[in-house]
Image (cartoon, rainbow over all chains, first blue to last red; front, side, top):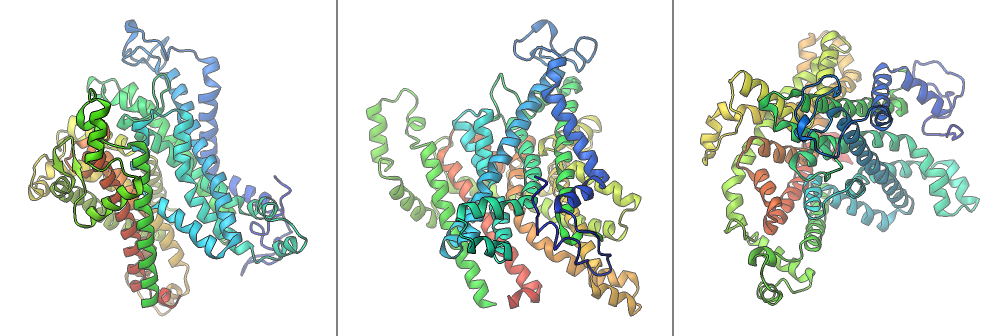
Length: 307
Length: 315
């Protein structure tokens, strides 16, 4: 990915310095963006949190075993202690092991939705921006139409009818998350379309699909990555809300929202370990994604650089 | 400007028609007919078919759509077979309560976010700015129901200041007067929105602070207070207009969850209950109304911005 020379990310290299700035050596846009990103302490913190949770959820179960499928009525609602580091649920499931399993489901749905959304959205946006004219108007009105429908309502209606799985939930949510990327990528393509390198490619006889795949999309990657991080954060919250409302993933798959909503029922009994650890997990992961997204946006945004 | 407004209104109407077609088609595909729910699980196929024929559910969906829209334009939004009431009557009964909850929290969050954002922009990177940013980030990352739960635990169950359930009164005036029961639901929605709005306001105010007219105002010796109130606030608030228009879907979703948590008899709770017992006409009508609100919200925000910002009129 590092060999993509990107005119959007590095405006004419560093040669044309902004007012009052000094002209630096010509650098790859990606390297510049990376340096900007790693110099942002909050971004590093966010990445660290996200990496921690990925390891925790996907590698943790290899080292920490706990019952999450078969009920054990002799070990219900135990407080945290030896054997069950974070206590047990009303079904006798081990809370810590459940946190890992639930995190897997939540993260899988969120990433699936964001990736599906970005792929569909960037193709849609690139085609609309490149073709232009009536096709562009129609395609963008379709985006407007879907953007106007409140997502939670539609996802709930679909989820009630078809008990959702990780795959179906990811695709349903992703079926909504392509709209904003479509707009963003179209905007990028409209500005790129008039650039010399695109004209050069066209004159050289490059076919439209190759033009989109090789020349336009790679230059819009910055915008797309930023959007993915925010969508992952959004999707985790949406999945949690679905779980809370009782229309989330079905047993034996549980996500963090299901766990939190189960735990809330025992709040009055003082079983805090069923509520606060999982709540903290959701908040931390969503916050990490937002921090990363903010920092990436700043580091890709040429105008904000060296202020 | 008139030409722009006319074009903008026409686009909105086109989008609205598209939205209604999509929603109707979607629901129609998922639930082709409420016959089984109306007649009961033991109804015979013949009875179901007869009911479908009698109520027009055997026609192609596009014809059903046209008659539905025709009825909707005359104020008939269908009939709730579960609650034995017309959907329009149900909505008339409940809309004011939802409007109060959402409107009040929207108003409060804007009134809080504007001064907070400007304060943070002026005191950029100070201890108080960083503290507020941290709180905003945490609130922004919080599921609505989790925040509601924490507030209930702290203020209703431990401190006994407020009620854990929203007002159950049927009159909206009584609901408004019942601050003991309404504080927590309103606070939940307000805190969630303030987090997003104040972040936005902060960056908008920072952009405005870097502009030349602020430098000019300072250079001519205007006291800082006047620079902020006369020159900064108005300009920094402009992007907020668009943001509020765009945040209506989030508000509707938050409204649904808050009403469910606090058992508040508004439209969101009605929708939630209708999900469980597949009350077809309520689901479609509320989704349509939600989408209409989103479109109207965006339109109003655009028009308001055009009125407020003369620079846009030229475009």
